[in-house]
Amino acid sequence: MDTNVFRTFVSVVDEGSFAAAAGRMGISRSLCSKHVADLEAHLGVRLLVRNTRKVTPTVAGLAYSQDLRDILARLDGATEAVKATTTSQSGALKIGSPIFYTLKVLQPHLLDFMERFRDIQLQVVLDDGASDIVGDGFDAVIRIGNLSDSTLHARRLHSVRILLVAAPDYLGRSGRPEKPADLLRHDCLHYTNLPGNLTWPLRRGSRTIRQPVRPSFSSNNTELLHSMALNGRGLALLPEFIVGDDIAAGRLSVLMTDYALPDLPVNLVYPSGKLMTGAMRSFLDFAAGLRLS
Image 1: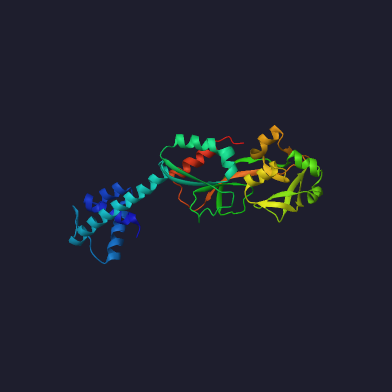
Image 2: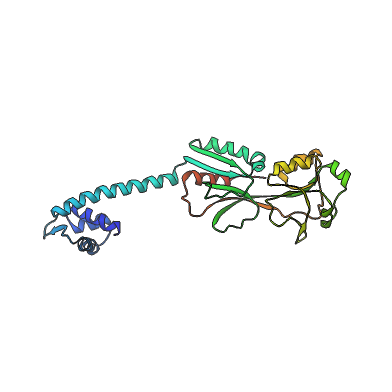
């Protein structure tokens, strides 16, 4: 039954009056009387003795009201405990994030978060793969790229530029690609988490081209692809936050600028059905205020 029925009965016992109990519960006297009558009918036991001056519990009614009072107190305590987890800025928080993105972009902000929220036990798992958020026990993960799972909530953090790059010594040996079809004759360092079956996305104006490539090396780790590109092993598609310093220093060159790659969104993704703890809410609000690049 509705817990309000139980609370109404306990209030009648405490107040000794339907009118007073109705005022305490914020309901009409007739509804108060109906709640008690429904409870008695459900139990098949008379719980109250009514007269013109006072309402008193029967022996069964008194014992039942005492049991209900204990049960309702425990229920209220459990409810308050759960509410506390959604407001308290404390507790454990498990976040997944791509390796190089964390080290190059997110790390200083994580230090700021830890300083601001000292009672949150933050765990960051570095993983370039598409982690199973629910199965692996994550509160949230950071994902770079367009999302396909509509059962998840996502908060957009920012976008990243993707650049086609190669080392000068590779270009000296193999020449510079000028158009998408040229990629077929080059050594391509392929990121296996990239959508599409061995194709690279290139954009000219409003048109996106899915150019087939023949990888000479493939990996699901951007740091390894970055190292291969720096050592002249081929062309690579890499985020600007990874290669920006190398481009500025001349260790890598940007190629085919007429065919800019589409920017990729960076999202903080979290399960839709999971309890929003205070720690998680603190991280979401913190992430929303960041200026990342």
